[in-house]
Amino acid sequence: MNALNNLFNQPRLGVILLRWTLAILMIFHGWAKVMGGVGGIEGMLVGQGLPGWLAYGVYLGELVAPLMLLAGVWVVPAALIIATNMAFAVGLAHMGQFLDLGAGGGWRLELQALFFMTALVVAFTNKLGPNKG
Image (tube, rainbow, N blue to C red):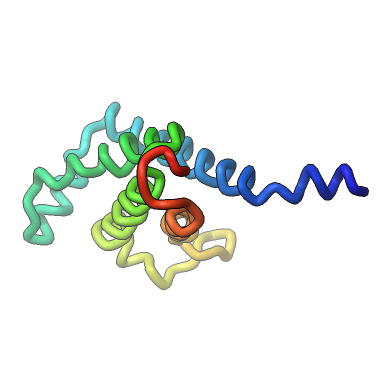
């Protein structure tokens, strides 16, 4: 029993595992933007009266910041960039689904909420500054 306690009583390891999971899953979304472009996002931004060039910020939120999380460099700012990225994603593309349920009964925005809240947890459980995460 003591060995199991030692194995599972590792909060720092848990935070690192959460940080890496967030990073890897976000990179998949970023890679989709690399392959398909950000034209759709640009159109949504322009439709809301915002400059289209802001669409390129998705690369920061879905590739650069996650790579920073993997490397453990500037973890808090990187996590906050991801949270901001998710807030923009919901605001631009998913507001019409905010109160919707999916076919399985779950909240339609549960993935976006999970990314957003995980990014906040990572930010709040790490020290501010380089190489502190």
